Length: 69
Image 1 (cartoon, rainbow, N blue to C red):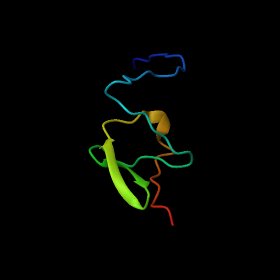
Image 2 (image 1 turned 90 degrees about the vertical axis):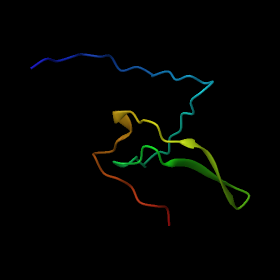
Image 3 (image 1 turned 45 degrees about the vertical axis):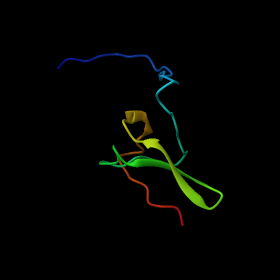
Image 4 (image 1 turned 30 degrees about the horizontal axis):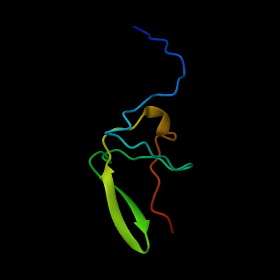
């Protein structure tokens, strides 16, 4: 079995073409890629982008979270 040791580091992203977001205690779910990144502003939802990829460190024990109450 091949193994790779990679130090923990902050991954960079292209600020000109990518948006980096997170919400503590929540995680993406399988199949979320391609879904909208939307925010509620002034009672209306706006789409700011699409989920392209996530880092494995964002997954919380393989569990998906549900919508907020």
